[in-house]
Length: 415
Image 1 (cartoon, rainbow, N blue to C red):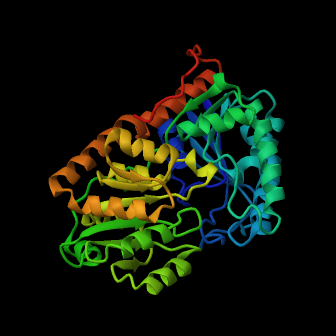
Image 2 (image 1 turned 30 degrees about the vertical axis):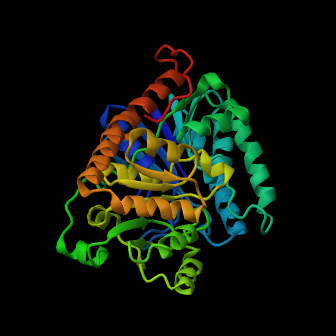
């Protein structure tokens, strides 16, 4: 097949889903064409050594990547994000017909940032069938501030239009299926395809002396949260829980984000000496750090739009055979419990999380190892690159009319 891919982010940005999908589809013999922007995530500035310009196209065997200019201010403010989204939509629209006009099917990595571009490109390409891989229903962070509520509403209505246009829709979590159907998608066209992680980086590892020295101070249980310290994670809950168990366990937070100052301030206010902060590390360093800790912490606030998502750090932890503590609702907690890969509790309940921390510290190391093994087995079975690309490839064939349609897929469980 000739397959087009539309993605707001693409490598060298940390966009391993569209990047690895493009490489794997090309390796399977398809001709793949990617339409994307110039790399600027997460800093909101074009990467050193790159210069935005028209007619930037690279080629490798069966894989072509066309980059178009966009306003590189997506992280600065509501207005900056919207300017970036809309400028990408305009640039993509100018080249889509020439670059993607003869593909058999189009795959859209459907982040909110891609919404306006997807709507325009689908309209321009006319009869080219599309498969949407929905990652988030619409942007909600700060929706009541700075006029973002108006933009969220506009984005939501645009998403509804493309849900009705798409030949197939893949959703990244079971509950997200209900959300896109409620927003107007045909239930017969919606399938569950769980995200995978970058398996070249995240795999079971043995911690070296440096990793152990960085993560561990003594024989106490170590729970690690690795990733963004932002509004969606609600890490204040974890700090309060850890402060109640200052002689039982350590909480190690690796990373940074918009809420870091507030979370650090709370730890200082509570005198939580067992809460430690480590600066952001390269992804290639993380498997050793995971292995040096006893558990990986997955946090989500109690927000409706987060109950239908599975944070990418969960797949990374499971792929590394790390046992998990999930302070989250919906699909994330369900996955952890069903595959018996760790412990869970309701989100934003520090007392319940403190109870999980205490229980985690009492579990013998061999039992923790077995939790990690079960999580790794579930990842390989349900969430791996091979499993995910198989499903996306079939959806592309279905969209293009190359294979018979299966019976309507029921709402799948996570394991």
